[in-house]
Amino acid sequence: QVQLVESGGGSVHAGGSLRLSCAASGYTSKYAYMGWFRQAPGKEREGVASLGVSAGSTYYADSVKGRFTISRDNAKNTLYLQMNSLKPEDTAMYYCAAGPTMPVVQVLRPYGYTSWGQGTQVTVSS
Image (cartoon, rainbow, N blue to C red; front, side, top):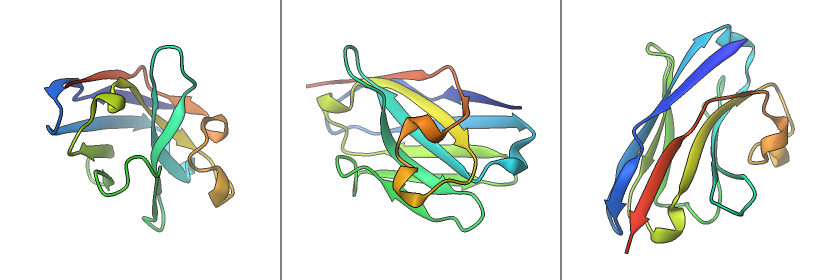
């Protein structure tokens, strides 16, 4: 079992930036993908970005391409999400997740991920 702890959320104005961190501990080597998801009130949880652990391949939702960057520091066992040019519609609770091998078409869908953090709130005001 892996433990995931997110941090770095906060409140910013539109156009601002935040960097989210996800510290992983436990048996992390069995996971093939790590990703960021978000859920706004009244909406379903959606995939934001995902990273293939072994190859370093990255995947992004269309809504964040060019603005968000997912990365991982292997030495620190930490996943990051750099968020630039934030928009009010980016407001949500952001979750870090880890999952086993899965088809690439599923990496931005939450149901394939088996370990989840508690989330960190991001609020973007206009």
